[in-house]
Image 1 (cartoon, rainbow, N blue to C red):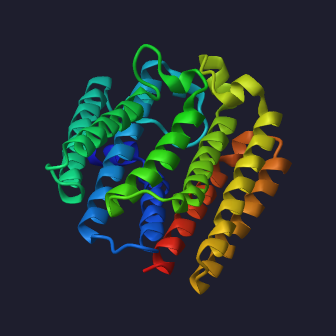
Image 2 (image 1 turned 180 degrees about the horizontal axis):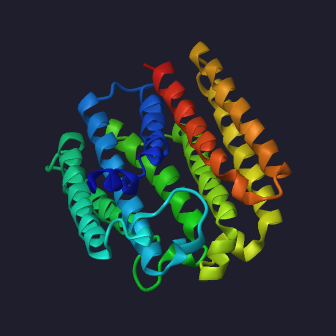
Length: 296
């Protein structure tokens, strides 16, 4: 049955990282506001659909270009021939529509259709998010192949993920979102950076000019330390903004991040970093969950 191949194409292990920004924004919003749980559910649903869309588009885009031919890590469905290019392209269209519909429903419950300017702005933001999910490796000039993946990941998982969700929860914006932007944005970029370190050789051979391919492994390792350090400092600032005893549990993901940073610096063969990807994603998820629970 192809169903199991579709679940592999969905890459469910990427979902905890993608919803981290929603949980973080929910926790920060709860400091001063009461949040509608329906809006929270719809934010999570829309984000999950966008992440699956991004994963399917990435599978298709890299499969068409044969980028995944000699990759390390999870098997890709188009490259392996388990799902055809046409089937994957159809799935990309379906999840684009589902993401848009879910986003419109979210806007109805959060903003309402009477606030036209806000509605138009968030509709455009939604379309931009769908474009970003697809354009990473699809199309004539995908930004993931030109070294802009890091920038867009920070924008989508940091700026838009935190600020957009916070506004949908509260219909307001505050400087309190800044630590959340740095925690979720930097850890998401760190996951991408580690992924690009692991795929350095195959990306270089395929002409995929990621930041790691452009700057080299040594630079990427110090870049990784910078991202991890920034995320840790940003999380620590939450203690100053509004201390809650629950935040002390954040020492656990911080410890994981320290161990990860040490492993990255000491690893000569970057193919061995595949198992470290989930540790960063797990740290982002746990940190965000702690913030969400702390301010309930």
